[in-house]
Amino acid sequence: MCPISTTAMRAVPHSTPEQRAARGREARRRSPRSGHAAYRPPPDRPDPLAILEAQSAARVPELVPIRYSRMSESPFRFYRGAAAIMASDLAGTAHSGITAQLCGDAHLLNFRLLASPERRLMFDINDFDETLPGPWEWDVKRLSASLVIAARANGFDDAERARITAAAVRSYREAMRGFAGMGNLDVWYAKIDADRLEALTTGQLDKRGRRKLAGAMAKARTHDTLQVFAKLTELVGGRPRIAADPPLLVPVTDLLPDVERSALESRFGRLLDRYGQTMTPDRRVLLEDYRLADMARKVVGVGSVGTRCWILLLLGRDGQDPLFLQAKEADASVLAHHVGASRYGNQGERVVAGQRLMQAASDIFLGWERLEGIDGRQRDFYIRQLRDWKGIAMPETMSPGQLAAFGEVCGITLARAHARSGDRIAIAAYLGRGDVFDRALVTFAEAYADQNERDHQTLVDAVRAGQLPAQELPAA
Image 1 (cartoon, rainbow, N blue to C red):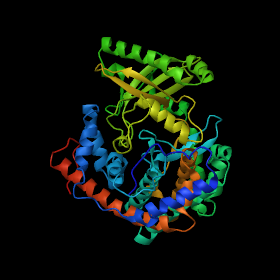
Image 2 (image 1 turned 180 degrees about the vertical axis):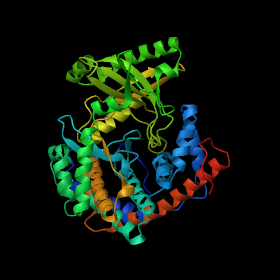
Image 3 (image 1 turned 90 degrees about the vertical axis):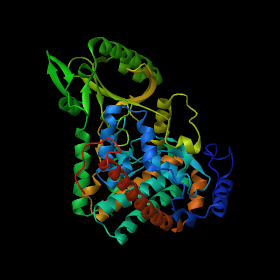
């Protein structure tokens, strides 16, 4: 196994394409592609519950039971919250020694429809809480295992799951070969917009699948600021306020006494001023045209439950001109223990830098800042719009063919993201033209799905035994 280095992310300056390809072929000798099939937990494998509890220790205590409850619901939900566990496991697997900027949590639900600044519907990676440079294979393996876990939940058989996983990995490999032959600017400008998404899936989806895709894209366009404004606010004294939905959404007026609330609101007012400095000047002018009207603590996702997340209601020209921002706590990446600490002093900046590097187009309000919390501790945050044409996949409703088509688009998207930061020519040369790597990851993904099921059952057993706090689970 090659030592992990985050300093080898880019090609040697001015090396020729031939030299870069030779580097990739040499990596095959050190780490054969077939070696990626192996996953065998070592005898001293860290306790998965201990990893989760270590994360929970730094989170909002009253929200931790919600996290364990959500992760207990199914193996797939457990997997969504288990990025730290898998990072620990991946650190012991084979890799080529070629690195790229990683998403760090590239499961299939972190690929979704988004809006570009030009108001075009895009398909891209969405979640960058764990982003850090590392072995490019780790993202591909996390995506592959997520497809198997989702396919098992749908009752798909061994052959169907193998076809789904192989299709996703093949699409990554073939896309990377395509990017290897492109110029730098062409790689940077590459994207999957709505038109290309439809073109990519035309041959894979039947008539029903194409209708579902068209419906999903139309629905995503309705998920905008006005929609979330209507959904999450109510009029109080003639003014829009965030409506309470405890414990998932708690307005600051319900969370803190008047004096503490006023102090926190003042801190967030200053945060908005300072965070604007991390944006381009034109977007800073736009932000300055809004004023903070209300804020609330929000529970988000599965793995992120318990981290400090605030939604901020801002108003523009009048009470019907809203902007919702989300300020989410950014801690050290789960990859950092295995690949080294981020070069950024602010973890929010780490997230933003990784997102801007990997996404084809990022939210115009994306930025970062540091804030003193209710408890007096300094914490890093990144800020973005709460919802902007977001469309998330529902794998539980997909047929084998639809999940395979979705996995293929995810594979292409991940290859484009890695090609922007890593040595795309070396990676493509390492992968080669054949399906050796594809077949290896089919085997790996099944083995890791087995491990995930064991870990999920360990959590369920701990919750039922009262060892971990969670909402009551039904009897087995």
